[in-house]
Image 1 (tube, rainbow, N blue to C red):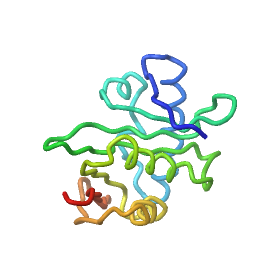
Image 2: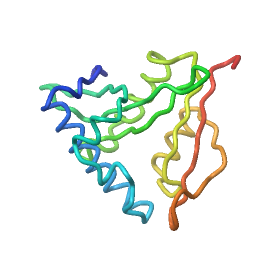
Image 3: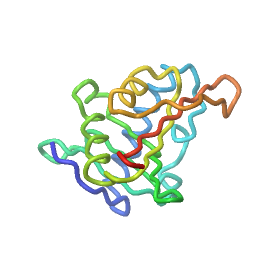
Image 4: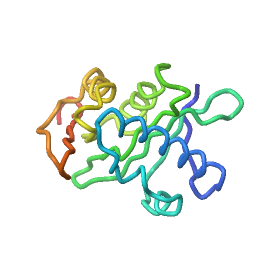
Length: 156
């Protein structure tokens, strides 16, 4: 399954990303017991306005199975803003494939940060398995605990 850049100025691509994001964040909301995830409530227009960089895992026939979006940070770092897989594609290695592509092909020599709900066991396991170091948990809203992770290339 190839990982390809996504162009969110294309209406069909943006609609697919928005649909998958909402479905994936609904599952996360259930896992962490918090339905106030900002991306879960954002409109298509709001999602497009973020100015993120996007890549997607594209199945045979052109169906988008999942995506990863990131932003540039200071000091050459990268912040993963979202990593979402269509629930129909869960447990097929899509998130691992997207994250591996990002770390090895897109920004192999740069520090990478990401956060997820601390109770989102599948995501916490993924980031740990992919070599991220867990930082301090934090609570941006009552009833929500987030876990932060950092991946540093060797020598950084």
